[in-house]
Image (cartoon, rainbow, N blue to C red):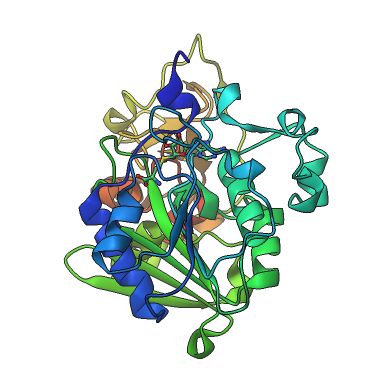
Amino acid sequence: MENKQEILGQYFTKIEIVRRLLDLLFSYKKYDNKIKILEPSFGTGNFINGLNEKNYLNIDGCEIDKDLSKKPCDFFEMPLTKKYDLLIGNPPFSKYNLKESYYSLKNYIKSAIWPSLYLTKKELKKDKEKIENIFILKSLKHIKDENSSIGYVLPISFFIKNKNKSVKDEILKYFSTIIIYQNDKIWFDRNIPCCFAIFANINKLKNKIIVIYENSIKNEEVFDIKNIHEELIPQVIFHKNNGYIKNDKGVPLEEFLENKNIKVKKSYKENNISAGNILEKNKIPANKLVENYKLAVVRVGNASVGKCGLINIKDDILNDMFYIFDVKDQYKKNKQIKETICQQINQKIDYFRNITCRVGSKSIKKEDILNLKITA
Ligand SMILES: C[S@@+](CC[C@H](N)C(=O)[O-])C[C@H]1O[C@@H](n2cnc3c(N)ncnc32)[C@H](O)[C@@H]1O
């Protein structure tokens, strides 16, 4: 198969990462060594090896690629009668621009394991869906009882606000504790933004979501389970809590800026303002009307996100990379305040880079800017 690595999502979790993930899981959920475990897409066997090191030996494995397994097995063909105390591993992830990497319903319509037994109504209506989501949905049908858990490496995009709602709702039918772990290490031979999600029932953490970002220390934040559809990306939450928003002295920008949509002239062909030159536009020229100047903040782009400039609403043409803000009425003719806000946003570009994570391209929300504190 050409492009096999991409289609089958073959990136293998480094053994030192696997060891950390196993330690984390077993620190929250105690299991004896006899439990029955499934690694549903074992690849080169890193999770199985890590488990063996800890003397967990009662493990079933499944792997579709005949080059990696003597007995290749498609997880979606595995009988649902097989039940496990723990399902653990790193399922394949679909790539948005690679059709073959998705789960396709028509491939399984004649299967002995009917997709209707593990898909929700929502997924049954689609002809294709992200394979990691279907791995989760089918895994839920393999859990043995309420003491069972699932620990999967997932793309970080899984926990973006309001994404994958039907899958998250289905998870909550089985589990009342969710632990989401991210650290500052690279987990594969490629840098793919991901996390380790543990779905479990843990009495003292009932109805809780634990979000952990580990750098030199383990930073933990606890949320009520009703926040499941919010943005739960550990690295972003860590930087928001430790960055300017919570700790900085000063006044949030929402005190100075209107939260309104502002129309500007836009064109990708004729624009004179782009992320490339916005930093040069940090002053209002002496011969121009101050009230025509608005703040433009770059909203997307790995290197440019958070850059700010002052644009002239009458003369300038922008591309679609910006959020535009105007100051409140009392500051509309105040050149100094506009220039100060622009300068202070630019001093905090690192903050904007840190509170967004690379899923395709970095992007920030309007409220991230309005919440930023400045000292005017
Ligand atoms: C991201 S890799 C992870 C491998 C291993 N769990 C690890 O962490 O090192 C995903 C693996 O899933 C396998 N795979 C893809 N689709 C599968 C399916 N339907 N059933 C079983 N394995 C599958 C791929 O061949 C690949 O080896």
